[in-house]
Image 1 (tube, rainbow, N blue to C red):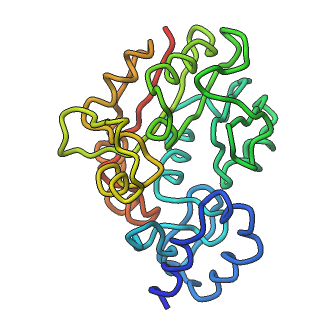
Image 2: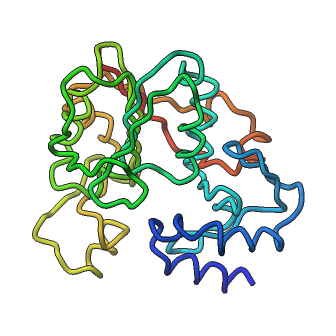
Length: 255
């Protein structure tokens, strides 16, 4: 069963998977009923989460809201370490994740704008290299798993910095290869199979290394590399929510 589910989920692009989730993926929850894990985003409990990803990553996808490990981590971080659920904030959410959209739209303290160049879930179509908003517009910005796709990541980062208000903050996550000291990119590599081998996906144009925070700083941000899971959560919590144990939260501030 796991192999079949993993194959199906691996071959449906995530943007389309998100659109049909209420029809197909949630049906699979029947086979995963239990109390072994809990989704920090929607609160649902299951025996375990669904496999997901090109390698069939085990215990990854929530059958109810489609959160992945990184989404459950981010939601906990927002709850425990930020003012996101308390203060009145204007939010720009680039490449919005399905598991967050309805929840953020229901928050009375959040003025919520979703944007992306191609996502069917976003309300504003935009190129992140040229964000169509005035400087100092937003209190918060979320932009996750985007910078590995764009032509000029430093330009995209600087645009997010530009549209944030002084004192505003952003969470900007990307896949990283911790064995690399520096980011690897080569625009001459266009073969999809070679891109997947070198950059982990055929639609990636770079693979960030341990210098990712430094690249965010080049965009203008003051960056805090928060080892939230490793330093502040118990092993029991990390296991219950099926969190990525080594992932760092990049908390980016406009000061």
